[in-house]
Image 1 (cartoon, rainbow, N blue to C red):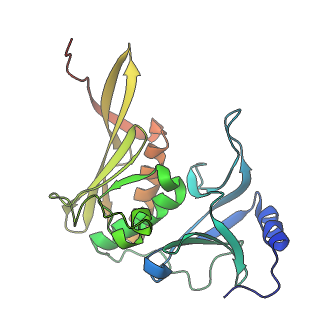
Image 2 (image 1 turned 90 degrees about the horizontal axis):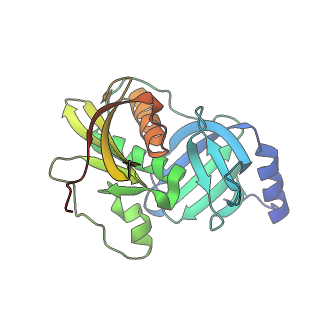
Image 3 (image 1 turned 120 degrees about the horizontal axis):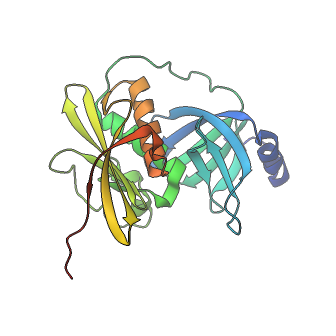
Length: 247
């Protein structure tokens, strides 16, 4: 419920007060926002530095300076129960506090389902990259941006190999079930070399296998976010491939 007597000016005062501070976020991506929250923490930047001539962004970044939450001008901002709330759509919102949220679950080694893990990944990565994020398939299509405009999902149900694929620009990341309670991450990036487009396969330097536990899902999200943002220094190239020459 919106706090009484909270004005637009007070909402922007809250934004200014958070600038440069460590904050905690609660991300909910579910129909009617009726679903479990994903809790993360990062640093709030009211006007994040951007390239010259580009529009300034309001973002929350992780410990590596990568986008954890990106705010857009179309988001509806308010203050709810003491938290800054950004409502992206009826199925997607982010709440921001300058302290941990009450009742935040502790990270533990209990295994969760693959579906649970992919829903967390989608919520976290969409919060960071917003409409730039492409995914196949969407594990919760009814909560997607496409559903908002009554556009059917690209795929009905999972892919044949049960993989989940994310892409931003020329970077893509794929997770696949590998063993009981284990998923494997592989990444593909393309670049121009000597006038030719080259596709490279990468694997995380810290290992490509992740357990379906809360600490490893967080680590997996961090690695995917890094690769999609073009930060390849924590990845090991495995192979390169040039497109066929049709000349």
